[in-house]
Image 1 (cartoon, rainbow, N blue to C red):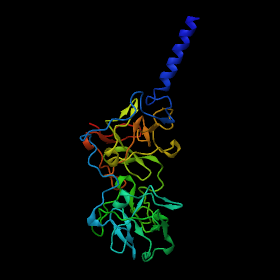
Image 2: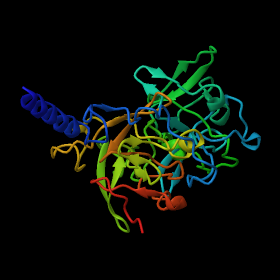
Image 3: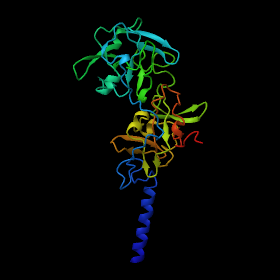
Image 4: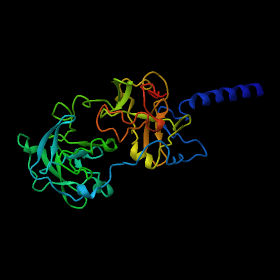
Length: 323
């Protein structure tokens, strides 16, 4: 009887080890807490944690103005990097926010966000020459004001843009993008949502001329891993101010990926991390994923090597170009 019991316990132990071999959690492949017993929250990195200065969703700049006002006679200017960009009557770039929704139109930028990204009021706005007037609309905000929508997307200015032609808000937080005349994201080639970022899956692979194969998100923005994170048991050490510079990649269904090694080959490293602050973060090979607020357009790799701790991630979860 003792022999049978010992053998049974041994088998159970092996089974548990197998289950916990992925990212250090039993529920690998579904949702991973990444927080081992006795460690309820990731440690706050110090000032020299290697993630750079705080940008968040940007800072209000009185020089650029922070009050909502109408767009007036909208116009279009041709940017070498972004293609056709929508502007207000004064030539200031108009932006859209990925956290907003077009169907139905809804703004999710308020409070401090609204100070950095003043809303464009719908009253008096007129479509640019050659642009369908039906693309313009409005959405009623919580304070009762009517915000201009273009192609059903609420539009904003950026307080850090201080003169016509500035596009300092492009790519901020991985969620703010200059608007094309049809309300899509401005991109080379016109018509919005250009070839670099059109119809991309949630995560896919791009061949960078210097780095080789790297992972990008649905907007074509480079995805990074942080060398101060821990893959087993999985834990993110990018918290607080770090997250403003390095926004997390939210969960992406495995069916909405292309070329990512961990999703379809039977390995158990493509899991979701439940972060201490309550958000959920996608991982590859147990490494939590981030984008970089300093990347302004698809193809940028400005986060590569920052602080000696941030690197573009390969489809297999490796740190690309790490010395």
